[in-house]
Length: 188
Image (cartoon, rainbow, N blue to C red; front, side, top):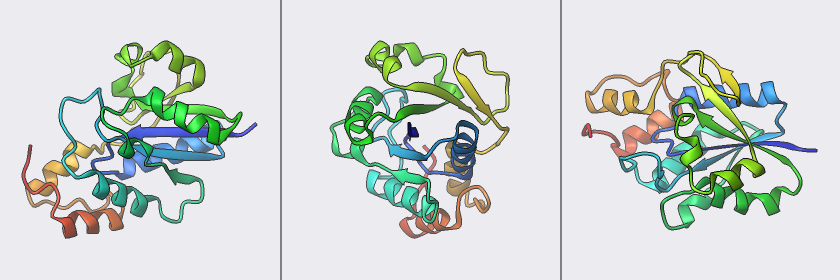
């Protein structure tokens, strides 16, 4: 049976922390692939994405280019917001057949997970995996993939707004898109 990871998020912007943990999940869980799903609008975040959806998708494509086991599905960008995980899983399930689906969440989502839209149904369709880049001892019954990576999208946006370097925080191609599109010039 195939094992497929699904990694949703705003990816505003995608950064090396996301990519390192996605690769760790593939290796640790023995996944055949990891599908990145950029959200139109997360129901769990109070702020809107700073970069437009099409640019976030472009950055995601640039960051994952050449990674054979990384895929992107932009299904959430074609639905009206908010982006509910259950809708995405119900969309992916027929295409992926009887594959075992692992839904990857950040450690910051663990506390509110049971309040997610149609959580009880979702819990029957996927196995949740916590991607913990803080490196703390996250208390959860779900499998945790832990690696201390002190990189965040908030920090990247702030550094760009302050005119500071983001080299080594994001893939070079993502840095070029941020520069070309003049993203994150004003701190929110």
